[in-house]
Image (cartoon, rainbow, N blue to C red; front, side, top):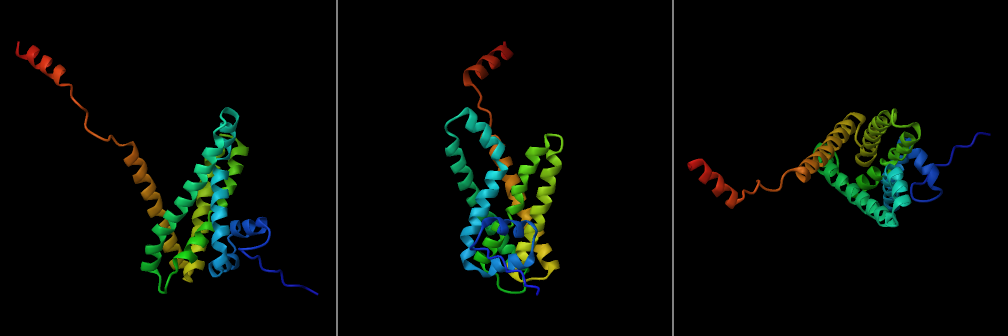
Length: 208
């Protein structure tokens, strides 16, 4: 007698099956995430796990050279959670503007949290070597975009077409904000300061 497979709960049970369902972009699982208010905490844990996976090699190297790697690990986790909230904050108004029905922020937040799961596959890039690392990173980036679209579809209840539009726009807007922030951080903070004494000397020499 065939038995129907038991649905994986996003808020309880072993972590590995939840990660597998999230990575495989299974719609039923993301629908369960959207509906389960208790899944917000586990979604945050997934975000932290994905961030640590991204920085695992750097953390290992740092742990061999410094005793302060634990502080760096804590900062990575904190920044990952802040980035998760920022991503949802960017995606939320876009989803509300383009969705045909009400969108709840927490539903979107936890679905986007589980959509970070493909970032764990960054570990594969560290295993294949430098030559293939960019290709793995590109593949992970595409997978993250697809996961975002699936997450948006479950959080909003919209059609595939509308979810693609919302997810792609939100993804692009978030990347744009990140790029603008990088440019702002590396831009000169002020105009070059002139040395009055040197300027006076040069003017005197020129007039002489």
